[in-house]
Image 1 (cartoon, helix red, strand yellow):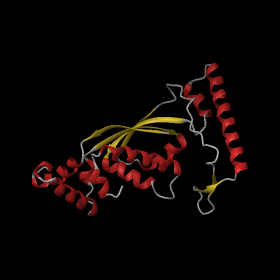
Image 2 (image 1 turned 120 degrees about the vertical axis):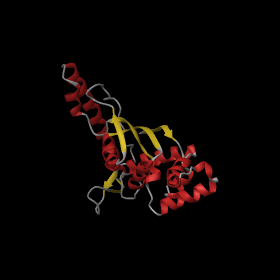
Image 3 (image 1 turned 45 degrees about the horizontal axis):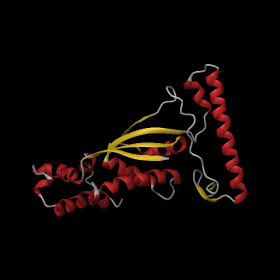
Image 4 (image 1 turned 60 degrees about the vertical axis):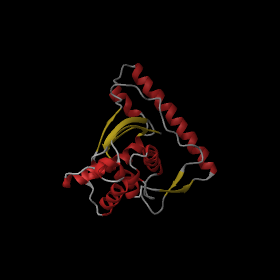
Length: 215
């Protein structure tokens, strides 16, 4: 899986300016520490609208089974995906490494719990490799017969990678992070949102906003 932060529109100052417009003021009229204090107040008191003004854009490559989980909490985000109707992207898969196959949780219908034993790990990886090879071959066989991409793609497995561009507000991505970082969320979805926030933090543009939301 790959995550790339493409664009950022503004920073913490925009959050403070959006809040201060009520008094016809801007963040630049105040000391940085005052804006930090205001941002903490806004987050603490659930005044969420100022955090909706800054915008972020990511390019994400992830398997379809992860996309389906992440996308459940994409409120406030617009996204566009690579289309198997137009291009052949049947050669890009996310493989579960041997040693990382997890057992079905006994307490949760959808979750996992603990790792499979070493013998099962070998079998699972062997099955995964076989399925990917056969599905890719079957896809190519259909293409050789002149079958349309939009139908040929139906035999490809869920670990096929898809590429998307996501654009949305700072608040939307904070919400996405908080939903997918929970202990009962699928590990792979946690990996995606952790990397998104890691890259955002490295820019330093939303230091106070992310701290205020404890991200």
